[in-house]
Length: 342
Image 1 (cartoon, one colour):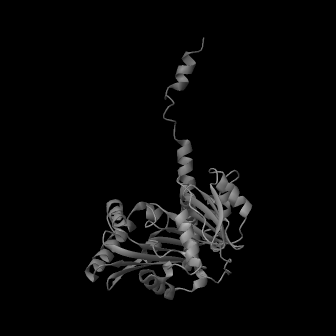
Image 2 (tube, helix red, strand yellow):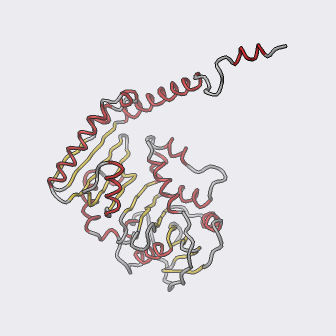
Image 3 (cartoon, helix red, strand yellow):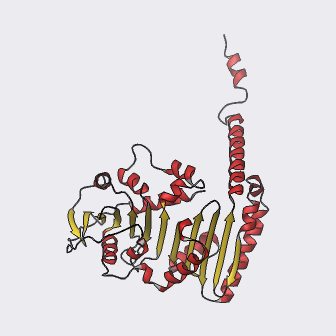
């Protein structure tokens, strides 16, 4: 599974610094209480067009992702702020392009080590502003900000996006959970599985440039308007996704093309080598009105079998690579050495 790697990539993107002028501090309000039962989605600005939620605590513990998550974790000498964020319990990474092209924000909930996070943030350059905003401690460096709200919340990203999150938390701005496209998708997906098994979810309100990129790189997705998906890990692995298109005809066409691609992929030798045939067989695409629904189920038994096959194939390839003669070694190297003897 590569879920952990994807999550860490999101963290890395959110921590990228962008040089610009500092912003003035805003008014100070009392810090709002925040409990584990609160919804992080209610803090994400309504203008966000992509948001990824991850329950890092569950991913660290699940046998499906525990090993890969540990390998992807930052090692000794890595950015302290990055290491701290990856050790949090839950997070939401969001893109808010309406504030600026490429603007992102990360909201993380868990055990906050303010000293370590601040140290990592300070390593990127001199902090031009220290202030409080909506009850949060705010450090600003150029166009980037790091904020601490209460004992268990840390925010980082584009300064205006961080401030927008704090506005949402204070109830002074619309949040993503009030947007109809998000509420509809989330409502449909949450009906299918219990909340306790949810480990990750992704929601995207596709912009024209995103649709063009999907069509160019994947040959599909040019008609997608919205996308929602979630991953659940219990004993088994379950994934569900919904794509919203403009018309029912577009939905039927996309579902048909995706089904054909899966059938074609099933005949490839690598699929058999890794024991993925049953996985592809469980992948379903169906059209429902103007939506395409997808689902995937992998049992605990299949996980063990796939892991075993991947290990066997990997070890075989490693042995083949080790036994292969080096390209830069002449075949008659031994003869040349003997002829060079006096």
